[in-house]
Amino acid sequence: MYVHFIACIWFYLIDRKKEWIPPLDYIWGWDNRGAFFDKSDPYKYCVSFYTSCLFLFGNDLGARDNE
Image 1 (cartoon, rainbow, N blue to C red):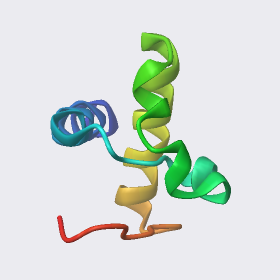
Image 2: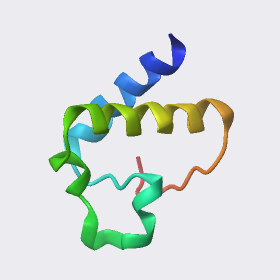
Image 3: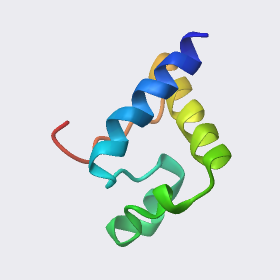
Image 4: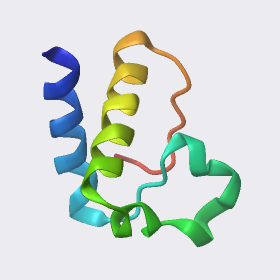
């Protein structure tokens, strides 16, 4: 339940700017920002869920802006 809740909050926060790049897409660089938001809803949920697991377990966090 916690992971789902954090995933929903995380998606709400990144949906405002639409510039976030998922950890798996870092290799494509800043040219790929915003491409995540053009994907299907199940894909966006799975990536948000994965990212919330990383937040909870403290692994593979890469800050890309001031927020």
